Amino acid sequence: MMILDGVYPPIATPFDDRGRLDTHALAVNVHKWNSTGLRGYVVAGSNGESALLEMEEVVEAVDTVRHAAAEGMLVIAGTGRESTAATIQLSKACADVGADAALVVTPAYYGGNMTPAALKAHFYAVADASPVPVIVYNVPKFTHLNMTPETVAQIAAHDNIIGLKDSAGDIGQVINLLRLCPPDFRVMVGNGPVYLSALQVGATGGILALANVAPAECVAIYKLAKEGRWAEAQEIHFRLMPVGWAVTAGYGVPGLKAALDWLGFRGGNPRPPLLPADDRTREAVGAILVEAGLLGTRAS
Image (tube, rainbow, N blue to C red; front, side, top):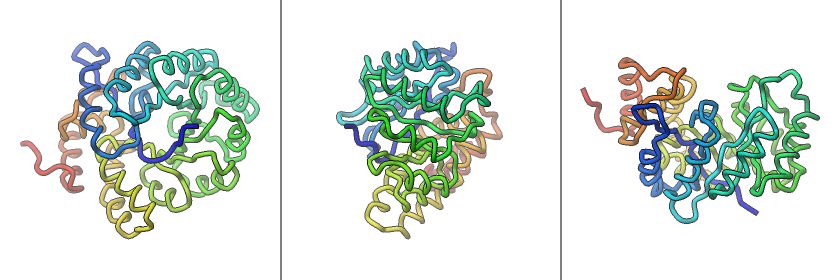
């Protein structure tokens, strides 16, 4: 059984000048991340613009990352689609090119009908058919649907559902997830501000946008927390919080890609309808990176 722990970035998806998936740039980024202590990568997550990727592009991106990732690193594919059938199809296709697990977001278009029974049926059907373990993804910011800990606990009973990425940003919810779910069900936090607090109460790691631009620091927080060195972990966590805000709630995917550009990765432009970061935003992101000690100086 795959052990879900450590730190994973939901990696940004680079595109070329014609708006196509840039597999070369993606591989370059992965090679740079390989030596930072990350446990693995999440491909085609929310910060990877999964909603704007065709299914074939998701498979191609997973294949690229699988070949570029260092030995022993895990590759998790974002395979959630609105229909159960499409989610199963994509999960199988990603498994065929080397994904170790499928990250499946809650269907949300018919949110009013996504009752606990409907969600359980969906995740059970995907888990029954998936050749790789399934990780449930709860991200109410984008889906406008928050899975309750009670619903997750029901879903966690399936043998092929190994964990949850919870991005609700509610530490009370994390505690209830850990309280209600089986002991071997792994709860990963997907929200930067509650990262350290979640580790303190028993979360097994983080799937964090921040880990795209501060991978070694996110790993350091995880290791210090494992050793009970909370004051040192807190110092890093506090220092990184403005960066975490900039690459998520503050400037979103365009801000994340601007930060990657500043740090020598291949960020580039997001896919329309997202607009690229303007000059003012890029300057603001650069200043935040400098203040956090991630960037030595800003270009003029």
